[in-house]
Image 1 (cartoon, rainbow, N blue to C red):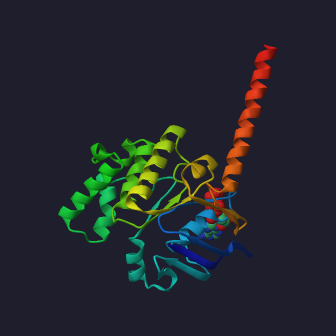
Image 2 (tube, rainbow, N blue to C red):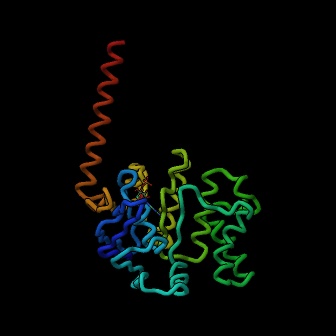
Image 3 (cartoon, helix red, strand yellow):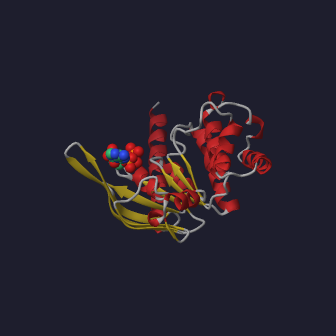
Length: 255
Ligand SMILES: Nc1ncnc2c1ncn2[C@@H]1O[C@H](COP(=O)(O)OP(=O)(O)OP(=O)(O)O)[C@@H](O)[C@H]1O
């Protein structure tokens, strides 16, 4: 369970102070996939980064698996973060390490013995379907492969939560669908709670159980994707596609 209660965050730019997160409360149930959508600058990434306190709130509470992250010292926070993986739009792989070296990195930091490390890297690279790319450097991999390596790295320490900041925004539609399949598999098979920030509505609706909408630092709504509101959106999409089919038929009739 991820629970944000009345979190606030502002940044100072010159003489101006901007309230980027404005009194947001949000509970995300264990084992679900939760989307956060909204216009550019709404505060989506900042809110996501609060869930592992990469961004600490000015006030409010951030609990993950019952632990109040804002009250932890740096060592305890480092340990708590091991159960919270994160992936990014631009992958953030270390360029001078192979895929193997990238995935091994969090295990090295956690002081996992070498033999266990090797075993675990192999396991997670297999899980994302890249066991044949262990010795490649990031520059030798496609975008989709880089994101799979990043996912494997995020999984290395067996997290219970995976935070995804625009995970498919640099990828083409086919690669996007492969990455969404991997994320769905991680959720279903490993029970990992996933939070996805994205501006790609199709991707969000394809994979999420619930979605929150942000605007100007505030949460304006949260809905179930399969609830009546989700269905009405599907209904609208169906109507739109029916209308475009009719227009096409009319066009063909004219030709
Ligand atoms: N470290 C920072 N210092 C100053 N301002 C920041 C910082 N991080 C974010 N901001 C500002 O906070 C606002 C929200 O940023 P954030 O990245 O959370 O929005 P977003 O909804 O994820 O946008 P996008 O979809 O464009 O990524 C923006 O105006 C941004 O410039």
